[in-house]
Amino acid sequence: MDYKDLAELIFPNAKDISYYEEKYPERDLKEGAIVTRFAPSPTGFVHIGGLYQSLIARKLATQTDGVFFLRVEDTDQKREVENGISGIVQALNDFGIIPDEGMISETEGKGNYGPYRQSQRKEIYQSYAKYLISQGKAYPCFCTPEEGEEIRAKQEAAKIRPGYYGVWAKCRNITVEEAIEKIKNGESYIIRFKSPGREDRKIKHHDVIKGNVDFPENDQDIVIIKADGLPTYHFAHAIDDHLMRTTHVIRGDEWLSSIPLHLQLFHELGFKAPKYAHIAPIMKNDNGNKRKLSKRKDSEAAVSYYDEEGIPEEAVKEYLLNIANSNFENWRRANKEKSIDEFELQLNKMSVSGALFDMVKLLDVGKTVISMFTAQEVYDRALVWAKKYDKELEEMLQDKEYALKVFGIERGNKKPRKDISKWAEVKENIEYMYDDKFLSKEQEYPYQVINEKEDIDKILTLYLEKYYDENDDKQTWFDKIKELAGEMGYAKEVKEFKANPEMYKAHVGDVSTVLRVALTGRTNTPDMYEIMQVLGKDSIEKRFEKAKNNN
Image (cartoon, rainbow, N blue to C red; front, side, top):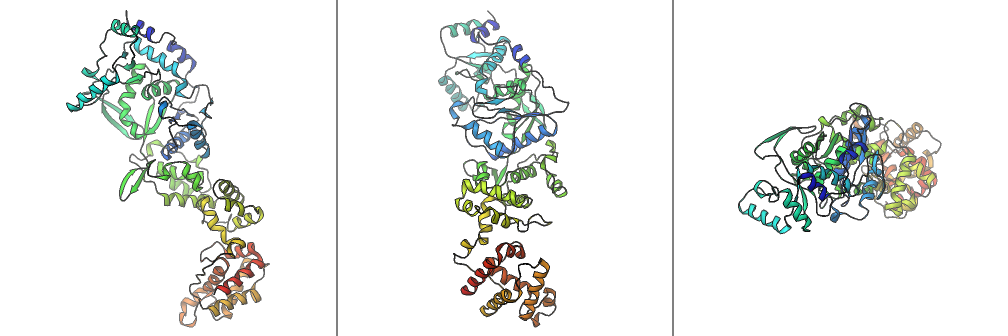
């Protein structure tokens, strides 16, 4: 009896591994093309860190004419959530991160290297487990869970490393005959990898992001096939990345310590290992302490948060690239109009320690991104968001023609307005442009410098009676406000006021503020000339009347 007999007894129907090597050949890609993947578990919402990894993976594949695929690692079926896969697919779609291959719904995949769900690849893993057993590199372990606990308790009491290794690996040296007899007697078992490693030896490894690292060799005889016949993550990922011809594994740096085991598995299976790039996590400043963004504590950790808040996907991606490569910000400054697809991401320029997540900066990026949209784009996207999250805003946007005029204010010029950072802010930013909202609510009027009722009433009355003409161009309109200021005894020019402050109570800018505040209830708005053009005479008259009554 030898190892081959044992392997045949355990996996009698498993194909020879040559079948899979032929079925999944090397990819026909140009030299330097990167093949990478996003490989989440369907165990809950997609974390912003997962989106960050998949954005980087997608970008590297695109810029090298490679392949980016979505593989779902669902071998831990106890932790799976309902519709977990469609949630992942949807999250990537929402951010325009579209895989070339892989899962496209809860049950379907596309591409020639599937199935892309680990639970559907059981026979593949069993073939490779059979191969390892036949080589004497894996073995059946008959230890019960209770025996495992006993081993752990003894190790803890002796204050030594926990695990199944060395003298603690009880089933490692069972003879083939003994193993066959136990299996034939119906004893339950799992399959363990027989590690050739020694903890007193070091391995040196070059990580694409972290640089050179060294670790003790792996000496643990890890489980590779569980009692349910499914593989563990470590074993499955090695086989999948080999057969799917992955060139670069891009993942969070919590996996860095698994490198000795993963390289060992690749070596013992006779595979060429991919390059590994371990990404530092996205951190949060918590009262002066840096910590990882947490699913439990931080709403912004879930990608669904960005949809709920209406932060455009372009802004999130811009911000994540900003975290990824420090030179992105300068590139963006020099290439304001260009798509981020034209930016070349470099793994070796990624931060070794975790970048801090800065919501203020993200919203600032949001303002810039939205400022570049046309009025039509702002309307369309605000409406899509409103239909999901804000019925009142949806109602306001029903008059499309008027809404487009509102969104068109100060848009499309050299310095477009930057007052909206996310769709959740649209209502607050445009509400004052709607008479039914503005005229019906109690309004405060922060007039600032000119605040005597008599002066305010006179400015508003004079403006409408003598100076307002809806056909005026912008220069004529502003010249008339200067005339109004002069007629009231205020300085027509700000510099005139600054030169002789004792001669005037106020200046043309203060008169403009009175008009702006009476019109909108705000001191800070986009261009007032454009606002008046959109509102029209009837609305302006009603608003000035309301302001005078409130004064």
